[in-house]
Image (cartoon, rainbow, N blue to C red):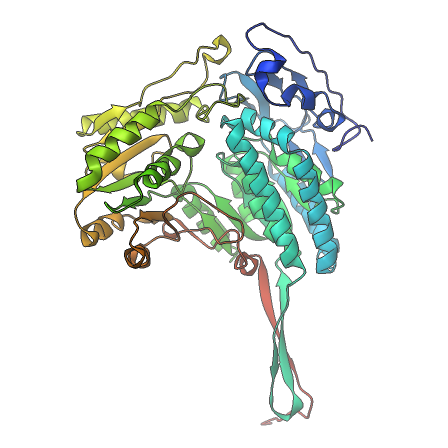
Length: 544
């Protein structure tokens, strides 16, 4: 078969070599992969040029009934989608309306009837095959994620790994779904059945497009559900690859469907009468709207929302690890991570030393073409978002914060990247709890550093937020570490590390940061329902 994802695709690849960027300089198998049959089935027309490339996406990004769906007959207005690294138009996005959403949900309903009747072992077999395909095509998917999102190729590979591991993990759980037997008097008994919900809706965010699609779909289909997934309209490219991979792995047509669009499309999904559950990752305001819409149909929701997480560094910390943790807590994915520890509380006695070292390392972060191996910070996701983050830095200075480094627009030396959405990572000192940069989620590479004196004081200040997604503490005192974590009001806490998310453990927040969990065994409970069955072995004892 010519290609791992399909037979009907025509791909044209034109490679223009330039002396400034040879194949040897790429240090990755990007061009080799582009020429393989596997990538020819990605349904894209490709024209790669120089370091950043010029990927042109012409084929449909919607997917239901087992194949991509062209909306050429739909009269909805198309919206341009831009490549963050270059600022150029990557594709035109057509939003799905009521008819398209209904078609996708019907496709998912049909698949649910078949999929939910399979044994857990049969579902696991399909999921493990999907994971195998993802592993085989890791580099290809990661490269498309870079073009889609702007993050570095190094991080994109890890995102693809997390997606694969999540599918493998829940494939194992699909074989263990079971109920409970309860013995009653007189030989009667009761038992429980853990059953699927039906058609689940997943609504993704733009910071981890492919990974979130897997994180939401894997537990859903492991439990016997089907899914309609709506990616962010800012990053619509890679979710459809997952749909094709599930299909190739042997899933029934309609098990995982993709509909593109913005707020209106999301609203149609939430209100659809055949949808049983909604899982959303994104902002708090949007999460509240989704919760309200789902409540009209009494539909359960999983909400993974924003954060303004504290990272507490005590004077007895392993200093090197504390520095590394602070950098990881603020600058992954250009700072566009909901769990980032952007309120960095440093005990006063080590503050000068901490600031000196964290500024030195922040200045050394290599910014540029996200497809290059040496790049550690790529482009922010869009021009409006870049402007928003820059606005927060400006406001911080106005409120009295001291910019120790960064917070400026950045233009890479490669002329092909001059219109990309880059900025230098920023460290803010002299911050106070009432500043906007400390209270609001910036969602960019901006670290706000605050000093503290006592454990009691820093706990009070760390918990002074409506959000509670994550928190971290660095200390060599084991008793203090557990004592502090016990008192932190956050759903995901880290001791002597930060921003690690193994799929085996639950991830989610307290307070306004969300409801429910993603990953870990407990997630099975959020994608299934419990049925109780009473079995009478004697006669009915009636009062009438």
